[in-house]
Length: 136
Image (cartoon, rainbow, N blue to C red; front, top):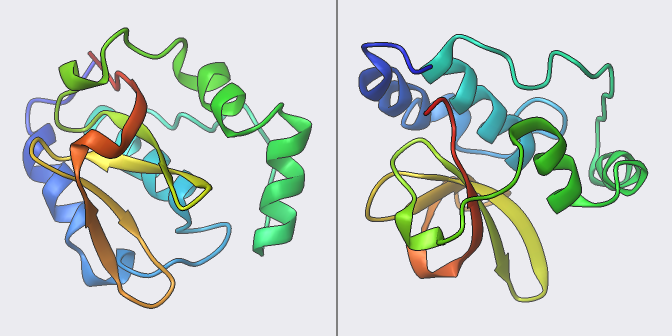
């Protein structure tokens, strides 16, 4: 269930300058999506796991143990919705760009994710391969 003030909390978190750059294990695409979910629902979607990582290699090892990024997200949020175009603000999207898969957060007319060098980047919603509901 989403909080009453979920939209304000979502945008405050997303546009906080400290969340614009990747920090493995604290603000990579998985943690960014999980923290957005926590801000709009007050529930930590990763509370069930004690997995941690501090760099890209360790993050990949965790995902490999969980069956990949898609399987890992399904284990937390359940199956994705049937049509990615039905996503709503705050939902989590799996994006594939240049043979790289990552999670992004839906903001209505765009997806956002922190990046290594460019800060928070915006991605067209059409790049979402699948989407999971968050708190609805």
